[in-house]
Length: 197
Image 1: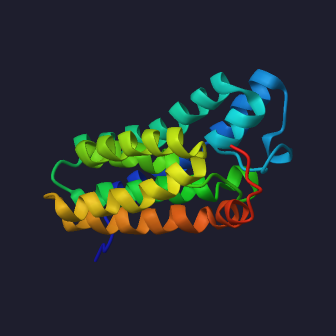
Image 2: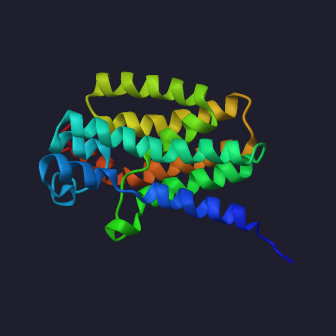
């Protein structure tokens, strides 16, 4: 008796592989010749790349990290229509792979951009509202980390008050908690008034 559809297992593995691609390491290395793991916070995410390699590199990383979550989840929805659980599991795989990519010895980003891409595919209206709030918070606070942590609270809340499948609501809560967890060092620096940007 086959308990797991091999097509589903393959889809999950491919989404994990997609999420593992370390754009935050590759792009600054290619554009500026720098090892982002040795610059700034050492985090291979779009924010650190923005600060250490410039806005263009940061934009490319943001786009790459978002699309590696969005495109696979959209593809799963097309290949396996009506299977919301598989889409959510594959989205979770991409997010986790981004945070702990085997290509960087299980170092990675803080789940923000890849989560944004995943939820852009799963539930575009709540993520669009969340992104707008993120932009406002970053503009007012001048801290990307504050915008990210605010978004980690806003998105799960929006999925709870709008009509969403339970699988998406659960993923939103888990992704939000993961983003908050990954931002604990930033929170400590903010409380000590030591974080820049």
